Amino acid sequence: MALIRCENVSIGYEGQTVVHDLSFEVGENDYLYIVGENGSGKSTLVKSLLGLKAPSKGKIELGDGLKLREIGYLPQQQDVRKDFPASVYEVVQSGNLGSRGFRPFYTAADKKRVRENMELLGIRDLEKQCFCDLSGGQKQRVLLARSLCATKKLLLLDEPVTGLDPIVTQEFYQLIYQINKESKIAVVMVSHDIESAVKYASHILHLQETALFFGTAEEYKKSEIGKEFLGGQSACLKN
Ligand SMILES: Nc1ncnc2c1ncn2[C@@H]1O[C@H](COP(=O)(O)OP(=O)(O)OP(=O)(O)O)[C@@H](O)[C@H]1O
Image (tube, rainbow, N blue to C red):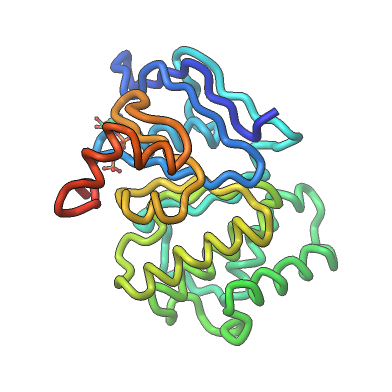
């Protein structure tokens, strides 16, 4: 079965439905971009995928042995306190908290995973530095390494390039693409950037309360909705 399967899902706040009759799935090794304009329901859907908000209708199922606490989640920038006085190593290590459970100490395997993920993201030489002293791009790499410690199967990234300059943004996209391809970790990325979606994604969910489109990136490029959104001057949805 797919890692995530959403079937006819509706989600709302106080009786007001903001996501309606949505169906899609995320398979092993998929790279799904969820795109849509402001207020189209992307963050609400993320909350439900993380088990933080129950759908009012339909069901969200996890498959292939995936557990909620094994989803590596990188929240939107404003949700993360970026000034806390912890070292880079400690921030990455905290990604192991979910799997540590009630054990008082981290295991050798936990520490190995921290080192491997710091290596993968090119931040090994920063490990003793205070997180608060890093640049925006370095902070995002650290937080991505932290999310990777939490998962072997699925990363869920909510607008991870907000506030990064264009060069660092492209580097970050490349990194995520590489992780998806080489580490065989499925990625779900919320984004306003349709141009990068068709460049990197295997699948696209274009959300506007419901699915305007769900399918492969190739199919999206050929679809009416894809042509409409990609054909304009800018391939960025309003943000
Ligand atoms: N806690 C809440 N209580 C009530 N309504 C909410 C709440 N959070 C979001 N909404 C409403 O749900 C709708 C979808 O919001 P959501 O944040 O999911 O959209 P989004 O696609 O993530 O937007 P953005 O791109 O701006 O982050 C909006 O109309 C929003 O006002």
